[in-house]
Image (cartoon, rainbow, N blue to C red; front, side, top):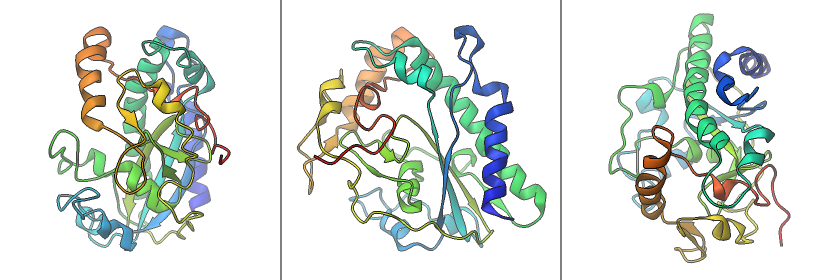
Length: 265
């Protein structure tokens, strides 16, 4: 199987799936075409995820999820202009955004399943999506045994930002997904060497954050988002108002990294 063929199948699924739209809000498309990259299942960076300063021992390696794992397929699906534009205003998140975030993740789940089934049905290898596996668990409310963004970083899709978003060549406003497979796809070369290489530390996400969860003062780089503060704001302010659709995204819109890698300043 060629990764180009899989990429084409993913694009077709984005075009055809009724889950990639919200008729109630006349949203014709939640996500636009994806970026796809490949990490080696044995990449040493996966073992670094077990470090308590990164994720912790509860993180499961690709081969722990799927024996015989060769590669990890990582993709980024950007939110459409319609959803991003609506959320550029200040204040509470736009209705389009919370629907895109909630219904969008339902679509993302279906996309993970589509890719897993597509690979398994070819008979060329096995595939598994950690986020769909019954072993996936959130360990302490803010940490889990698999990380879509960290896997995407390892695969070469992007680097982290002040807000803990991952900035890809199509920006940070979107969703990530990973599939572990026994197929030895060619590994994507990482075009960066630093964890924050795509972030210019402009601080615009700090101004945008209604929870005041983002600051310039965290370990070793002076950049970070306090996950507990963000989670509490979502639980206490947004969930009661938008239930069952919590989601903010202010730090991912109306910022230089919304839809591209920003200029370094």
